[in-house]
Length: 210
Image (cartoon, rainbow, N blue to C red; front, side, top):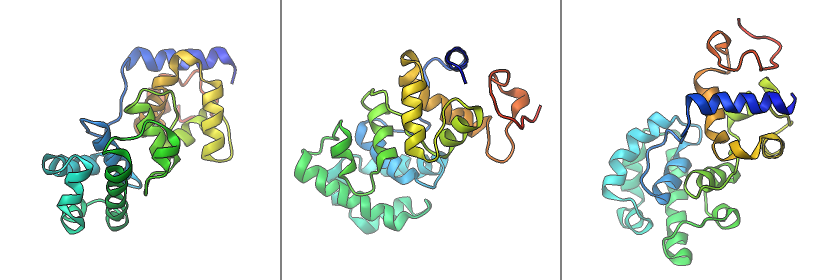
């Protein structure tokens, strides 16, 4: 795909959604971090249903520690893999209190040192909470990037680097959200809704469902 096509694609995304953001509900960087940890292999809707209750009683590292593991599990037991996720959250909260004065780090190295926080989670926090032009490549972004030919790569890291290199700088801050939303609601895995896609004339997918 050439540069002009990419520019036009992101101009269209920007036109219909000038200020995109995550569908996870949060009010501070810590809440976002916890929500993203919980969102692995789970829907944002499902996470929001759990965290809206949890964050009313505990939305700081110390409050989560004071809540305790068993009580935390009760709040998020509707979310897949909640046993492992809650153990990671408790361990992360302990490190945040002891090492970071309960302040969420704004750099990748420190974020990835936290249990349950991988590159994708760190990128979401860096982009959404701290306004850094990162690209958190999930299944939606991986699929959309390769299917449309916006970017290329054999794995998520290659696609991330390709996107950061190829997306025009003016769109980088919001591109992560646009691509996720496009993959979630239009360019779906099993059957993309090409007929209602705003970039179908620019997309280079060979099997469009028009």
